[in-house]
Length: 130
Image 1 (cartoon, one colour):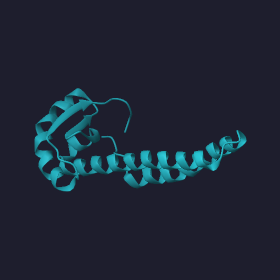
Image 2 (image 1 turned 180 degrees about the vertical axis):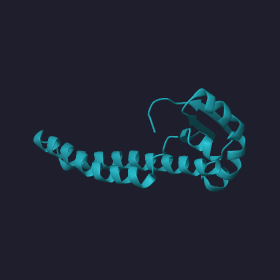
Image 3 (image 1 turned 90 degrees about the vertical axis):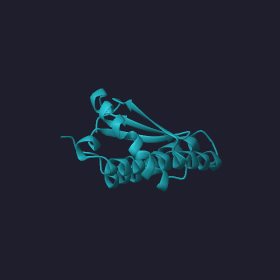
């Protein structure tokens, strides 16, 4: 059985890598004679990306808690895309099982999400190992 990533661990890794990355970029911008406005814009963009990643991770964790443990271990990601709940499984076999639970997940998630969920889709995502 594979272990799911812990939100605290990945969040801590993000917090430690983020300032290092920004400092390296800041040095490169200063070397090129760029002003601090470019760095401020970069900070805002990277901050938005980090926040979206945290939101997706929180949504994935919430859905995993709603699923049976054996199935939750194979759910690798969740996103909301224009009213569609997109569930990503690590294999086609687990995706097929996840399809049976997809509609049942929509009701409790509608109560906690800011956006309306109209339908659900299940995809196979083999892009990364958990």
